[in-house]
Image (cartoon, rainbow, N blue to C red; front, side, top):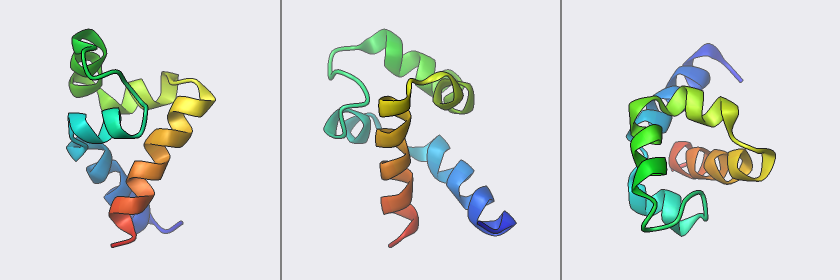
Length: 67
């Protein structure tokens, strides 16, 4: 991964919408607390996520960067 790709992935992480997280099973549609925590600091949220959740979130990032 190049610096440019990494930088873009970080940008994508900041712009992920709630419905995408719900669609990929990252959070429940009614989990306002988890959504608020993600919005407040998506980088920390991603780092602290369990492996399955991090993989789902990574899938969103890859899909967005592969367009």
